[in-house]
Amino acid sequence: MATVMKKVDAVIVGFGWTGAIMAKELTEAGLNVLALERGPMQDTYPDGNYPQVIDELTYSVRKKLFQDISKETVTIRHSVNDIALPNRQLGAFLPGNGVGGAGLHWSGVHFRVDPIELRMRSHYEERYGKSFIPKDMTIQDFGVSYEELEPFFDYAEKVFGTSGQAWTVNGQRVGEGKGGNPYAPDRSNPFPLESQKNTVSAQLFQKAATAVGYKPYNLPSANTSGPYTNPYGAQMGPCNFCGFCSGYVCYMYSKASPNVNILPALKPLPNFELRPNSHVLRVNLDSTKTKATGVTYIDGQGREIEQPADLVILGAFQFHNVRLMLLSGIGKPYDPISGEGVVGKNFAYQNLATIKAFFDKDTHTNNFIGAGGNGVAIDDFNADNFDHGPHGFVGGSPMWVNQAGSRPIAGTSNPRALRPGAVPGNAPPPITTPIRCRWTPTARISPTAAITWISTRYTAMPTACRCCG
Ligand SMILES: Cc1cc2nc3c(=O)[nH]c(=O)nc-3n(C[C@H](O)[C@H](O)[C@H](O)COP(=O)(O)OP(=O)(O)OC[C@H]3O[C@@H](n4cnc5c(N)ncnc54)[C@H](O)[C@@H]3O)c2cc1C
Ligand code: SF4
Image 1 (cartoon, rainbow, N blue to C red):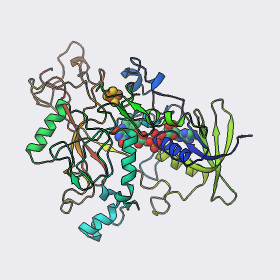
Image 2 (cartoon, rainbow, N blue to C red):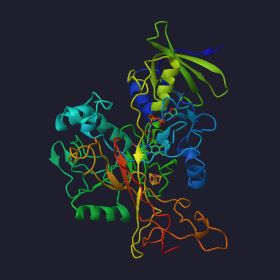
Image 3 (cartoon, rainbow, N blue to C red):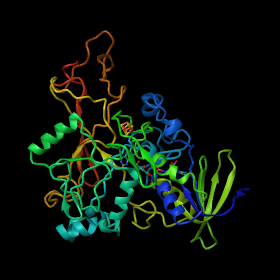
Image 4 (cartoon, rainbow, N blue to C red):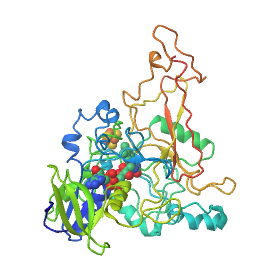
């Protein structure tokens, strides 16, 4: 029998970026807000304490901050006829858990969406004709325009303390020769912080891209280029390029997170409560099955609790939201055969391919420094910035050198004895890639597929380099 709690105006499921932003907006509107987070309480102090947080084995290898998939995981199947199997090894897909969600251990690359991607179907049909998009392709317009969203992007960047260089502000060109992106849409304000400094590898990419006629720009990053105080009074310190963004809590208060940028403003409010270790099982509905009346969750002691609320906000991340909706009988599940239903339709995860570039031994870079969102990119092949007509696909990708920092374990070259096929005491197996190089790769170039459809991505990665072999 569930214990029934006192009703609140709004209950929010999950406390990542979505939950934190909604909590701030709704408390400002005067509502009593309760946030339920399935994971533990965590914050810069004590979870991001230096030096304990600079522990690659604990965080990157053993994946301390992510969802523990030995307890609960997602299942995967490649077609509706397959048996869905549990994902038992985390790879690129790293779901957040605990207060701050993935926002606590994200990297900080902080783009605005390209305007045409918000009206993708209309845009491609207007430019290339109605028949360009195949009949079975499900892309559609978002139903909201860049112009409508611009004030919210602007405010979010102020809350996050985003570093970057505008190209135009209210139609006035301000970013030429300063690292602005000529393909970027107009903005109502400059970035709150100037761009971060570029690493040597990013400078090399900038030089090479310029030489062949592309238009390099500084990546907008939610890693600070200097000290900053956001509109909520939250303070951030300047990023020191330690290289421990992705997968870690930033001990310098330099990477935007719900914990650093929003939670301090929520904590003192009498109309806000955060309950960690509260795993929501379902959204409760009224007898008509059309109106949410609250949620049921399991608390830290394993008790079943019913939390009534006028408003239920699902901020548990896309597929957790879908799962909760399906478990609660909300909406019509998407059927990929008939194309009917919308719950679970069009989920897309980011696609990222990496190309390693090797330079001669006189080109020195320091791979161990970096920041999650730092780097130089080109948008010449992104969105619809080039003619798709002859190519037969839609969408594109930025390409960038994003030096996030090679940490000691991942950044160490594969020693001779550990090379695949090596036998102790015997000569190491031959190296197949005839590339002259320094002992570690000095640049990483990542085309990121914003839209994935008939887009060919590849990874060219020599197994080892000749000069250290
Ligand atoms: C390592 C890493 C690097 C990334 N880098 C970037 C980047 O550079 N740029 C970028 O734009 N994006 C990046 N992302 C993606 C970005 O961080 C996420 O898309 C974003 O943080 C998602 O926010 P969210 O609030 O929607 O979900 P989440 O942050 O996942 O928050 C959802 C919260 O809900 C909780 N929850 C789930 N189910 C329940 C339940 N049943 N009951 C209660 N609570 C529940 C979870 O524990 C979690 O805390 C990165 C992600 C990762 C993992
Ligand atoms: S690189 Fe900068 S933002 Fe990232 S963890 Fe280090 S200090 Fe923080």
